[in-house]
Image 1 (cartoon, rainbow, N blue to C red):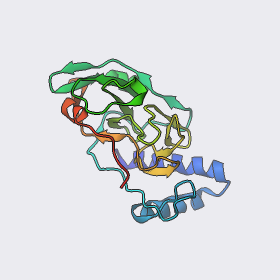
Image 2: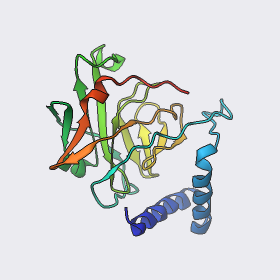
Image 3: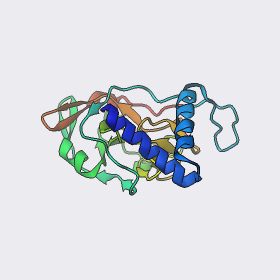
Image 4: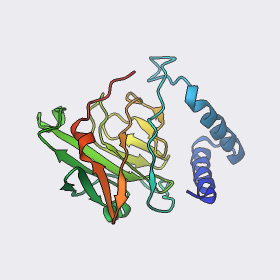
Length: 215
């Protein structure tokens, strides 16, 4: 993402916060900078009940840029269910579908999946999502919030990725937790490839995936 694009994204975040709080844009920018510096070691209180609870930052995955910046401040975006193909060791999604809908999901079924979720009547199924981040980078992950067992999310105009069941919010770009009961469990990001108009997702990773535990 270009420096100009990053500046526009920061300006958008500042404008959203200014409208919600009524404070000046300059103050908002200062607060954003202070918040970014503090994220790594800041103790987040979960529902006011666990003061000092440390929420780990999401794992780092190298992302691939697939578009220009995306503006999520205008309207809510919900997941669109799309089809995928099983191509040997890869599951493939059409890049065009992701660009069209911004955020998509599908359900991968395999007898090798070693997790059985209540959501699917005990069947070995794993939900997978893909979203274009505000920067234009692609994020692909397991679409699952372990504590509440939700498999769907949406974006909101405050630039959050929000769980459809428990309402937990994460920053839509960084997946850093903002608020809610399931903050340590954003979508589990997966390293993928993009080739010939397709997104290649490693099937072996999904078949071996285990629900995460809070650390």
